[in-house]
Image 1 (cartoon, helix red, strand yellow):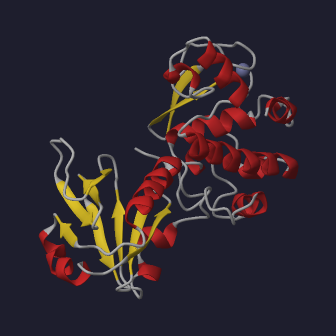
Image 2 (tube, rainbow, N blue to C red; image 1 turned 135 degrees about the horizontal axis):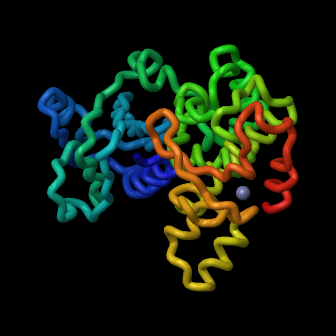
Length: 291
Ligand SMILES: [Zn+2]
């Protein structure tokens, strides 16, 4: 499933193509939405925004189209009236004079009036977005100290969109590796400085991934690997999808485990389980020294 950085990049691409332009043709695949087609046609697209893993396409008619890709949804931008070669089914088309934004296979599409938005069940539960520039470390620490989240394992917490939105499975592995934390730790087990450190990595790893198109290892190692002709899947992440390869930090073999029925990769040496190592192991200096 695409995570926050991929959704935000998709939203940027769609925005670049259609924001500020009049929708000359609007089509929905779901029959229940057909009445909206004529209402939105002729209306100007004023914004395309990512919210967690959902996208809101706003029209100057005052309504927004909410879409969530779930596992299979995919956006395409094409010249006006052109379509990609795909076996997928078209769920939404917004065509301006120059470009078409096309959404395929997504099953969750709704048209929201302004009064619906504050009550939308997905939007309502979203925590602060890691890619929102107004969200800082202090805000993320505040979430960790909230009683809803303080006693939960990081392995589960980092996938909960109400804790911090936009995180997903590869980001979970990478954030924990960078922070030097095993997924069994809970925010309440950590010292205040460790909570700040984890908040730093939550924002930094996610923002780096957005800025680089999905790279979460440090830029220096990525550059060295690229120059040596290493394939992208091998240097993209520090730990994710690198089972049995050496930890970039200590050369211990990366292990693959399951947490919350999703795969997670870790280095047992850099990320000792809760209660097996004294707090404040080498993680903070290791991580910050490298970036
Ligand atoms: Zn290691």
